[in-house]
Length: 403
Ligand SMILES: *Cc1c(COP(=O)(O)O)cnc(C)c1O
Image 1 (spheres, rainbow, N blue to C red):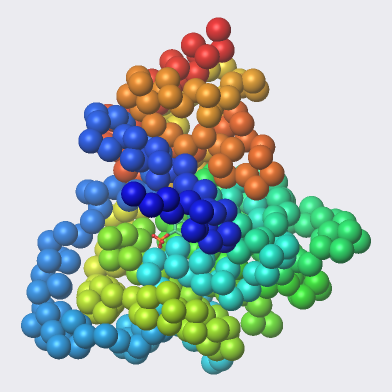
Image 2: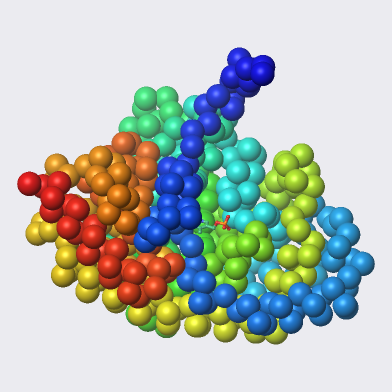
């Protein structure tokens, strides 16, 4: 058999496996409680409604739904996304266009493809979304990491970092943020910091990439946090949403709302990646928006996840070793837990998996390699019993590691 390794492009030689996907493949088919993935709770999927909708889409629009379609999405679906976003308080400007993508992961990839030259710097939260780090890194991005607290990114620290960066000749392109119900910590950026972030972007002429999968999953208040897109007056915010958490990730549908000039570049990139996202999925999601299935799913999931979040916090308090710390997730699907200093969660993982539970080691979520004693725990996927049991095992494993 021939050897492919010498034939792989330089660019692809730099690809590293996603630790989450690797962990998921280790746990597959085994009886392991996985707190590692970012999977929605399967009990939240509107299975019956989607079965009915899929049937009607094929009956009503079969020829269209099974056909190739435009790169940026089918027009009635793009219009439905515009109305949906507006109805949730996300300001859409006259000059903005919707680009439908194959999950927001493709949107992240296309943003990287469209914006990042090797050596460009992206400002990120520390910790931040692992899959964005990996995609931006592939295009040669460097990162400027800004710590966060329970009110989100410490925006007051950014300006100093930008000044230092500029002095040392760094080209800074954009700020990437999951401002509401952050992955992996579940914190929410407060209103003052949101305003300040926009001011900084204006002052230093930066773009903002607002990744917003969880804007509708805020647990303890009905207040909606004003999106950065809504606060922006200069067309600097590239907004991303997804149907993965509010309907079903298997549909692989995400979207971007951004000024036309930018979505045009994204369109050219998408033409060489996948021509267009699934036409059938787009019509199914369109019906689901129009018939209120998306809103029902959001309301149901919010209740289910809030309950699971509460169970998780109780279990953490009961089982984690003294000196452990975490943010109480205000929304989203995750909690980020710091074990006492000195415990290495990467080293601990094989033991935890042997005992029957998986999580993602914290280091993955930091561009600067910190977070060695942290771990991300997903609470949306496991049942309440498994969640409690999983935390009990993690707590016991950590206590053994500390001996
Ligand atoms: C889950 C999630 C997404 C969604 O990814 P899809 O490709 O749309 O499934 C995007 N960003 C963050 C931060 C997430 O947690």
